[in-house]
Image (cartoon, rainbow, N blue to C red; front, top):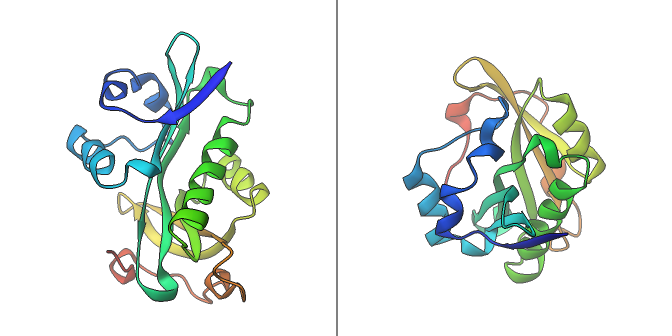
Length: 174
C-alpha cells in the first residue's frame, strides 16, 4: 500500500535512493529546505507501509497574470517502484493544487530532450512541448519546456508552441 503525503524534513534523510537515477537532478539541502518552507503544498512524498520514500514531487507556483502557473521542479520514483503509476499520481496532485487552490493557468516542467520515457509519460498526461531550451542542462543538453493548460486557461493560449528554440538567458524566472 502506498500513501501520498506532504514531504517533511525527516524525508530529506530518507529519500537518497530515489535520486540514484542518472536523469534525476539532485540539489543541495538548502534548495530542498527552501521549497519545503515556501511551497509546502507542492512538495509530496509517496511512502510505503514501512515508511520508505518510494518517490516524490517538488514544485512551486510562480508568474503573474496569464503566466501564473504551477511548476514541477522535480518528480522522481525509485527504480524498484516504477510502473505503479506513482509519478502519474504525484503529477495529478500537483496539477490539482495548481488548478483548484492557486487558480494557475498551466503547469510546466523541464525535461532532458533525450529522456524519451519521461517525455512519453508527460505526453500521456496531457503535456505538450511548448519550447526547446538550447543547452539548458549544464550548458550541454537541450531541455524541453512542456506545459499542460489548466481550467483558468479556457482558450489554451499557454500551450501554443513557440516557433523557435530559445537559450537559457531568454527564460523568465520569478
